[in-house]
Length: 131
Image 1 (cartoon, one colour):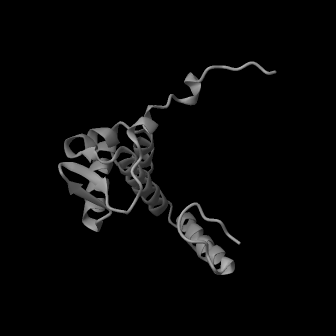
Image 2 (cartoon, one colour):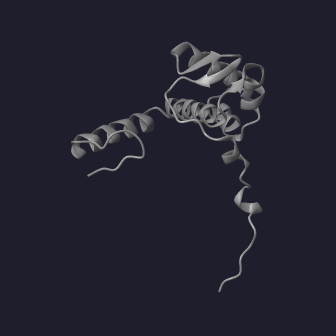
């Protein structure tokens, strides 16, 4: 049995593994495609987590992300050019939509409560002493 992190439990685990292996091999065979795939996923999840981003703030937001800077270097682009291309391609594909002045993920998702984003990074957690 396979217990996925999202979606239904596969009824044919062998077929599910075969599909996953083919998908992984495509990413290995096409490194640029793998970078693009990752960038699209990260950006879509960021939009889901934040409940969208105001349209005028999206490009500066993306350009300031370390993952986008790394992806731009791997794809031989500037972060600004990659941010623009990422937004344009995702709008064109329907993966993101402009709604009420905010760029939002088009996929169905459960909104993240704003207070969930106010958790300190682990480096700010108090230290504990062993018992």
